[in-house]
Every structure is written in structure tokens, then in C-alpha cells.
Amino acid sequence: MQNMETRNELCKYAVKTVVNGLVVGPGGNISARAGDKMYLSPSGFAIEEITPEQWVEVDIPTGEITDNGLRPSSEVLMHLFCYRKNPAIGAIVHTHPSSCIAFTLVETELPIMFPDQAALVGKTAYVPYVLPTTDLLAVAVADKVNEASSILLGNHGLVTTGRNLREAYYRTQVVDESAKIYMSARAVGPLKVLTDEEFKEIASLESEDYRIKLLQQMK
Image 1 (cartoon, rainbow, N blue to C red):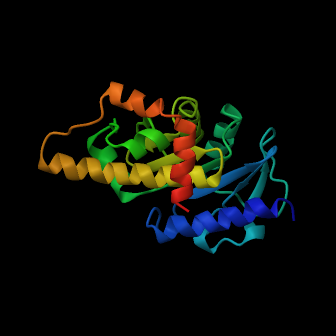
Image 2 (spheres, helix red, strand yellow):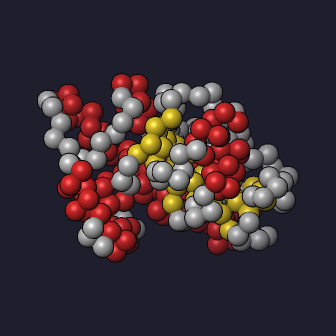
């Protein structure tokens, strides 16, 4: 069995995703890249129950399933197109946080409101509702992966990318929290979001080191 470290990491973050209420039942799917292969959750499985050997190995250049014969998630094209579009992506987390879905029912642009959001996520992209599991959705999401690491899907959920699973997963958590903060604040009164200048100030604070420190704190 190849790339056991990647498979074990996927199991770890699959459990975290469910425990933290980011998906329910068999919803959501996650993947990680190892060289020219991606490892993706199989179709029909509750992701927290997937064992290391059950992650489906897919060859990124060809799209061929190259190991265990299980059927990959129905969103396989979305993951595949994103890895092809941006080779820097090392992991993809697709979830259905209730806060993010609720946000997309009333808004399309999530403003930057606090420093951790600015440093770890930055701009969040938006894709209007597209029928799930289709190549149309796969193309729409892939078209956004070079402009944002977090993509809200109208009436559907959230896709986050990262250099590794930890980064993609924590971006999911931060966007989920951002959506909650936005809706709580809007229920009370007008928002005071970070200005472009304030956002740029955070970005100039050796942002790579800042992101690393944030991720270390989130272990």
C-alpha cells in the first residue's frame, strides 16, 4: 500500500471534520496529493469511518483509478481539476458547514473582519449554485483556485485548499467561524470590517511566519 503517511493524515482530518460539525452523514469529501497521485474519499462512506487503505488513489494526469477498486467520491472531477489547475495545492477539503450554507443564502461576498481571517484565509471566492457532482461545478471551482484558497459554493458549502491537509482544514474552520461572526454581527447592526489598508498591514507582517505560528497554535 503506497503513501501510508498521506492516508493516515486523511483519516485524522476526516475525523476532525466530522467531530467539529463541518459535515454530517456521508456528506463532504477530502483529498490529498502525493506526487502525481491524489487520495480521495470513496463514494458512499461517512468520511470518519474510512480506513487508510480505503482512500482511493487517482492518477492526476490521467484521472485513472490506480489501486483498490473502490469508487471515488462523486466530486472526483472537482478535486482532479483543482490539482491540475494549481500544482501548488497539496490538499482539498470540501465540507457543508451550516453557517457557510446559510451565509450563501443571503450574501455572496464574505468581508475580512479580523486578523486571523486576514492572515490564514484572505479573500474568499464565491461560486453561484451549480448542480453538485457535475463537470460544470468542477470547472467553476477550478477556475477560482488560483485567486483564493477558500471558495464558498452557493446553497451548497465550502471548498478550501492548502499546501497540506492541516492548512486546508484550518482554513475551513476559519471561514466557518467568519460566517458565524458575520451573521451574528449583522443581526445587531452595521459591520465594521477591516479596511484594505488594515488588511495590507497584516499581509506585510511577514505573513508566512504569521500563518505558520497560527497553524502551530491550532494543533
